[in-house]
Amino acid sequence: MAEFAANVDLAEHDFPTETILNEDGTLSGSAPDLPQEKLLDMYRWMVISRTFDQRAVRLQRQGRIGTYAPFSGQEAAQIGSFAALQKTDWVCPSYRELAGLMYHGFPPYRALLGAMGHPAAGFTPEELNVLPVQIVIADQLLHAVGIAWAHKLQGKSSVAATYFGDGSTSEGDFHEALNFASVFQVPAVFFCQNNQWAISVPVERQMSSRTIAQKALAYGMPGIRVDGNDLFAVYNAMQRAVEHARSGKGPTLIEAVTYRLGAHTTADDPTRYRSEEVQKQWEQRDPIGRLRRYLEREGLWDDALEQDAWQKAQAIVEDAVKQAESLAHPDPATVFDSVYAARPVHLEEQRAEFARRMQRELGGN
Ligand SMILES: Cc1ncc(C[n+]2csc(CCOP(=O)(O)OP(=O)(O)O)c2C)c(N)n1
Ligand SMILES: [Mg+2]
Image 1: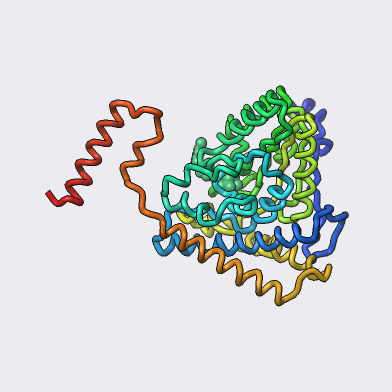
Image 2 (image 1 turned 60 degrees about the vertical axis):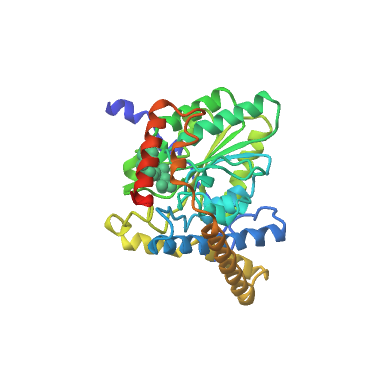
């Protein structure tokens, strides 16, 4: 065993973490060629997303929405990568991608509907090529492979991008998806947000690989490890992966190293398993402050613009809350619908029983 181990030099297969934007707002490489308007729009959406996220947590505390999964800290990973996609591409998200989805065109009020238990959360607007948010860990990777394969068979140049977390890499679906994607050379991008935790399981206990990116090697596809709090490095990595897929060269696995600043969901208390010291270190690496420092250095941003961005974000989020809360409450019996094309007998019976009970409770007899 020792002899065998001596023959494997894991350091040779290391994937260095790509960075461009330093924490003080200076550059350690060349910034991607982004039009100024697009760059400022990305920053504004980071601000809107952060405002949305904080508001959603408060709404849950007030009992106005159900369980919610915050994404604060992951805005650069999401918005930086979505910015490299086109509207004709497809996205298969998990539950933690609301910042990216809103930047991509998903209306903020609709982003609240999942946590409100509204049936409309199961549908995405017609004009967006986005699948409904996936809660079942890693299932969406297989959906992306299927969509990408269809693109290939139809001779389309569209790409399918899928988003997932570090914990998802332990699921069989992750491995099946990567294998299938590489065997059939489909135009897929696997975007992993390694936010260090899968609920209370740290990434060191999730796997003994040094990186997630290196798993790409086993499937014969490129792997990229990137600083997920660096908007420029993320955009750059995603663009290369999307180009690679679009030009028929097959899939890529990207690992964006980031951190979820909040709880896993509003049902979780991370102070029970995370150290305050590490938390503070990551707060220093906040992706929003980092980009703002760059924009200020470049003379593209100042205090007045900053104040205006947060105020507008507040208004957009308040409007979203109003719109979401003004929707008619769905008929609870709709939980029996849309599971099967035609309701089977047992669901018919349960639906009838449910209707009788509702009648008793509401009708008073
Ligand atoms: C198949 C499956 N198993 C377990 C769960 C319960 N669960 C919900 S989130 C989660 C952790 C996922 O961690 P990660 O992939 O790192 O994503 P993150 O939540 O950190 O974004 C688990 C185990 C689930 N939703 N689906
Ligand atoms: Mg995680």
